[in-house]
Image (tube, rainbow, N blue to C red; front, side, top):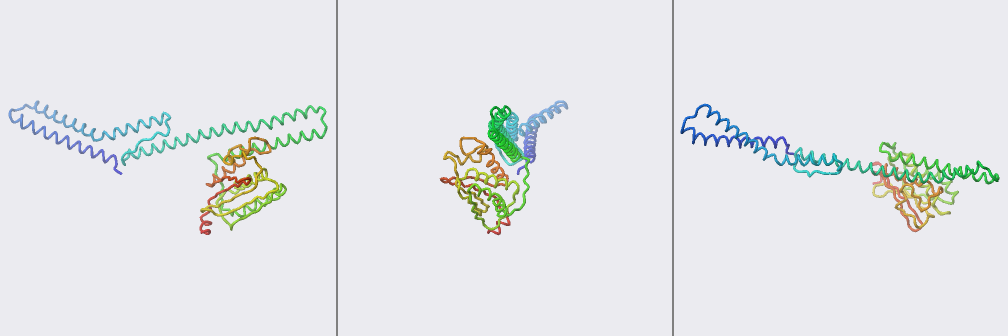
Length: 358
């Protein structure tokens, strides 16, 4: 890298040499053509010397300015772009020229501008997400709250109400209240997961054993719903994960299976290695309208159809699962083939597991 200080020193030397050469030439010309022909008094000689020095200084300054004019223009351009950024034109860039400190300064300003733009876009996106959450939560809270208030009013009046009707009203109020509790808890969990301050508690975990444990806990529940479970696990693979949060992912997927699977049906859970990553798949027959958009399954508050009922859940389960997987530098996606829906989870393995696999 050519340092700008070296360039400035070089420009000063050139300017000094040119000024001195000009001084010598003019002095020689004056001496040859004037001083030798007639005598000069001291005052005239001093005035002539002052004039020659002044001319040399002016030439030095002019030559120096000519040599550094490109740097002056570059500094002016940098100043203008910085002013644009300070006025809100985030993302504005400076053309990088050369390899000196000014070029390095331009690169740093460009990097700062890009980072500010990214931060601004992220904050704007978070603000939009917050507004969407408020809108969706308001909708989801309003409906069950209206039902609870309505049924409680009927219970308070107790007009021509037998015990059976009272029990049914209380059951509805209880179910609506539980739905609200679940919704608020899931919303709280999702908000925590999207916080930039969240720290995962990672440990090396045998994924086969973890899957077997979670599925073993859910298998009796699924069987009562008419869903059999078939597993196909490879040998033991280790991954650095936050166990509590990864269990939440599996639980959310299994809850999704319980709600939307055809009954009777079979849930196929498979674990394998693909392209150096651990891939876990959940595949089952679904009982959802053909209008379901697979690409939206992981969107907040999407429930697979146009109706938004309590029975369909909060619509945050898969969004939470996606957020957790992304925090683990993994991927989660869904594929639909006819009446079969498959969820794929892709997680990075430990180096030890990769070496054993190879």
